[in-house]
Image (tube, rainbow, N blue to C red; front, top):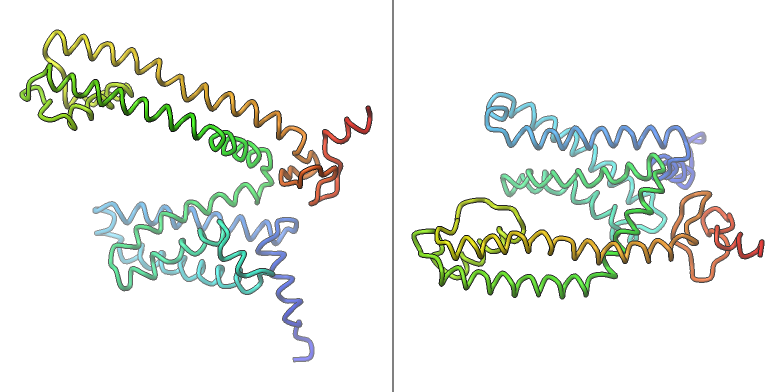
Amino acid sequence: MANAAPPNDLKRSLRRVIFGTDTRAGRLFDVVLLWLILISVVLVLLESVKEVRAEYGRWLRIAEWVITILFTVEYALRVWISTDRRKYVTSGYGLVDLAAVLPTWLSLFLPGVQALAIVRSLRLLRVFRVFNLFNYVREARLLLLALLASRHRILVFMLAVLALVSVFGTIMYLVESPEAGFTSIPRSIYWAIVTLTTVGYGDIAPVTALGQALASAIMILGYAIIAIPTGIVSVELARQSRNMRHTVCEQCGNTEHPDGARHCHRCGAMLPGMQRDREV
């Protein structure tokens, strides 16, 4: 017992392996974890195939439970070694980790719920941290900021499109006959949405000359409308890119910096924009 590692030392070692990627053991742990996630997702997919489930269902369930128990132990360890347990449990990664094990355990009381274990695929987002793909994380954050900044204009655009398809659907309901599939205004609006978005299922089609002419106009309008949200988001992407350009640490890729910061709070390197300011 005298040679046993103190609890704090054990937690520190486990924390470096489980949460860190700067050691060989830490990277190996995350790579093994990613493979287990992939295998568990494949198991869920295979179990949904009737023929595979009929022949290998028992083995699939055993494998599923083994992986679930491993994930449960891993989640418990993450909670135990976290310096701020509440922060981890309520974080995005913490909620996904919990959601990865809940469906299988809930299936003991609610059969069929285990199919929700497909949510484990979200844990593959850890690949960005494992392989230090900071540029991809930065681009994802850039896109998210652009979408958030564009949300009001996109909402106005969507409302305008909704008004258009309502008008077009109502006109088609008046022009076409129920035999052609336009049995109600909601169903006609459904046709207008499918046509405007150029999806074209073909389950409903106009048969009159006026209806076909209107359908042609809606199809052409659909191509023009698609370009509008693309332009809105593109403008915001360019603006956010300019704003973020001077806040991304070239040393570690960190993008979270306080306003006015000159150095990266993670690695201490001077930020790119600040280097140019100093040279001037």
